[in-house]
Amino acid sequence: MIRRAKMKDIPRLLDLLEQVNMVHHNGRPDLFYGPATKYNKEELEKLLDDQNTFIFVSCDQKDHVLGYAFCLHQQHLNSSLLTDIRTLYIDDICVDEKARHQHIGKSLYEHVVKFAQQNDYYNITLNVWSLNPGAQAFYESLGMKPYRIGMEMIL
Image 1: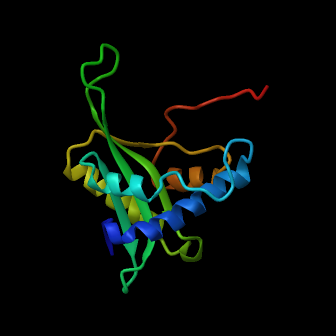
Image 2: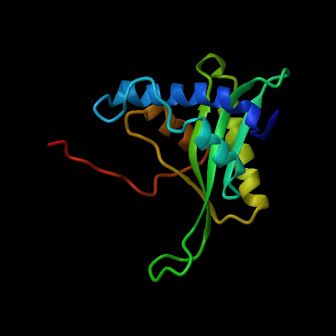
């Protein structure tokens, strides 16, 4: 079952956010601190109330959260450079490491696509760190294509 996240899901969201961070920390400890989360409890409460943020969770039969998709509405209004399209940006998708390979991530992604189509979004975008080639392969298997590449030189 996939539904919008609720306040009661915050402790579980924090657990999953830490799992995501550890993937990044293990791949780039020079950029990401060890056990940490992108958002704290108070920030998650605000995101759940934000009209431009959509947090979907995948739950088992007992309503235990197995994964999530954080999505943000983006639009470039009054830009002299960018067209005025509505983009649904996937800030994060995570499936609990104990629940992987059960098509939960694919189901979450398909739910996001359906939501975007029903709400007249032009496109869906996301960023993938090069330290996580499995994630890039996963998104490409779902039909996504790279459209922007970030580069760096460590000094």
